[in-house]
Image 1 (tube, rainbow, N blue to C red):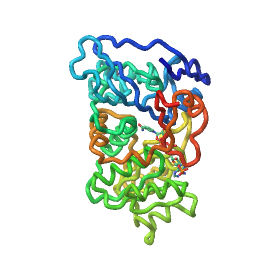
Image 2 (tube, rainbow, N blue to C red):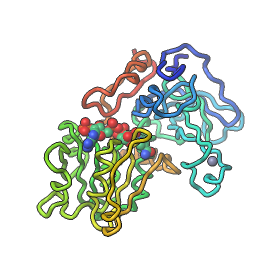
Image 3 (tube, rainbow, N blue to C red):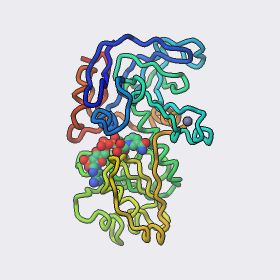
Image 4 (cartoon, helix red, strand yellow):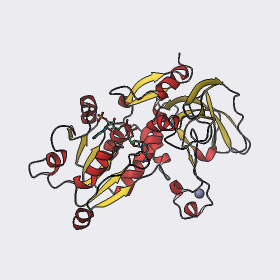
Length: 342
Ligand code: NAP
Ligand code: ZN
């Protein structure tokens, strides 16, 4: 079979490899689609730790081809999505239920072979069923959606809340939809590109703003701004220091700022502790997807979260190395790798 392998940092190739054989408790899944995520680009450049040689791809879904000994919950022909993050279950954090903080966390597509391939092998405990009649490409959005669900859970978002989302990529556009589903009445999305702002409006944003257009804090929170006094919850989904710095300042008194974006290691921001304290703003960070993948699968299976408009490009495995090595194209939300596509 074909697989896109990271041989070493900066060395990514389409290779011919042995089709894996599922071991006890494992599923062999024929990949239908696997999303290219910013993390794949960071891994390629050595900015995110991985374990080469390894097949990349952690946002995948497909059809069970065969099952290993002892598999009880899945059978060939079923459509599944994979939660890539495998926790050890026995470290101190896992035993406290904080599986995303597992000290031995290993991810499919980062530490063991992933979804930029014809097939992937994974423990059945990482798999979640998807409906047979679902669009075969939509399952690839379960992983990023599961990460956004964790952020919304941590925020404790209530019906009637006001929300600001910083960043109009996949994470921002999925978070926007989750906030709306959770009952937020006003959701303002801030992103530079006009196309992404239009898309956000079509997906439920009540208003959008361009961060380059004057003083964004004043434009949003001033008495005559879009959300006077700030938002109950601000989600930082851009992954740049500017937005991390803005997030707590855009929160209202007693509000929360949730950081989802991944910053380069060592990056620093300035915060004003006086302001955080006297406005009692909660600064929260949200890391991956503890126990949220099943809910993500359900939201996508039922069509409650729209993912079709987030697909910007469909490519085959042969084009995948180039698409990962180069930055995302202007305006692109998600490129999906579809094995078997020319
Ligand atoms: P993305 O496609 O790069 O989207 C981020 C968007 O932010 C960009 O498309 C850009 O759009 C916008 N942006 C850049 N500078 C901005 C600014 N100053 N103000 C407002 N918007 C700005 O990335 P993504 O896939 O959506 O992921 C977003 C972040 O979440 C990344 O850092 C990613 O690594 C991280 N992430 C975290 C988790 C987690 O578990 N916490 C999981 C997955 C991903 P414009 O060009 O329109 O501005
Ligand atoms: Zn653990």
